[in-house]
Length: 126
Length: 504
Image 1 (cartoon, rainbow over the protein chains, first blue to last red):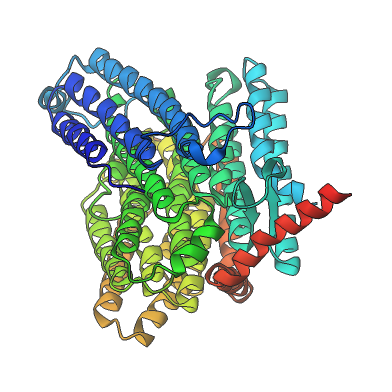
Image 2: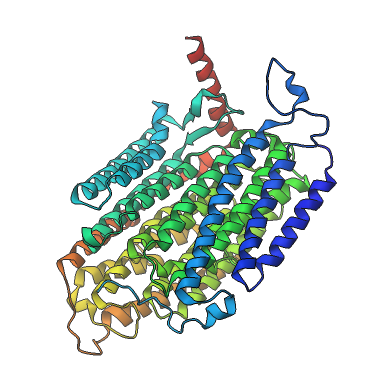
């Protein structure tokens, strides 16, 4: 694997930005932060294929030489990871929206103030 | 024969899909789900018996040879975990059926629980790092669904820490898989085991091991990343909470045993010491959190954190005996913890609250439930001859033999504080006088719920009284886990079988 400083820098920028956003008090920014974080993770997977310069897409059409193609395994891994990241992102979006609907809070300080009871006795079957 | 290794994944998955086709919870659906889980429990015990006698079973999915394809490996440790998971699932589902009428049961609860079980079983069986990541995502998504399925408005925010911390953990796990692929050029456990041995002393290997410890420590609820657990678990419906409490964090512990025992080389220098000390702090911090709580569910949730500390401490001590102790502790803990959560749920049902200071005198109204709770509480604290005593005894013995005085002291302190907070529940809910004079309501359904609790209590008593046999199995599992050469050989042997099959 050759050094890929540009990819590493991109992962660092995405990851750093994601952490900055995740630490924000606003739900919307935190959500964007988590989505960015999963993309930074995906990029790490892709980077493990090595430097793609001068290599073909990994299709073995017409008996092509496999040594001139990029490593296909990280590509199959990233495909799985993107799908999973997307579904978890969708779930998190709905959860944050639901919390907003339930408590009227769209920031963490307001969520802290939203209720005095711990809610553990509510909705218990009696 | 080896194809049966896929059954623990296929069966719950198929049952979940079929249960989805039956749109409304009905008696036939309930009977069917219970029958599937009971059959699964029987199958797991049979598989354990078979693996104990004949060695691990390996299944190469799709007939792909080993470094390229995905393999499922059922060794003793996996089979033990499968037995525990199907037992807990059965008890929790039966409890749930007893607790709520068909009309009140959410139609998606049982299918999601079955999906969760299928994902967990994939995590126990897989011999491949990326499949491990996928299995974590499968069961985490099912658990997110279960967590928010029936949440009332005042509790939805309690799901937020669970979801966000697991999102971060999953991203780190994905990155760890990628780094492992970049470092070893393979994701297969046995091939990583071969190639990592040649890399001992390489700082990249140490960093990767540290990343694995971070990720799976987070999933197991280790200090300092345990905050999500006592926030989210008490907000769950009782049967779901009991299954989460019994199984989910223990999947993290299982993977720690697997990764550090089988996949990574035994000489990682300082890392095992770090694991042991993080675990030691987890034990004490978790139990201190429990002492300050005033609800059964919250106290029990903090105890999970503390108990996970014991298991991971045994992993950090890193010897064949301590691994056996860790596996024994996992066996003991899953059963006891699920039983305690279910017992707490019966209290919640009878009293309408599980606060310790509001009601009491359950001892006279529900003696069987009280006895069951007391037995499990004392077992958790480690009173002989109950199962928890043997678990703690084995870990402390190994700690003393290795001269880790400070860690042994920490675990003894945690044990005493566990006893204190369990007695707090006992005196608050079961023993003290009824403050308001409100008559207690014991319904037929709470009797049936108690029966589900007693099923787990009986197993737990069996573990305590038959500790010698259980420890033999745990020791066998530990030796198998730590014997990396034999693991590699077993997995590679599947290629020979595949070639033989192709020639025929």
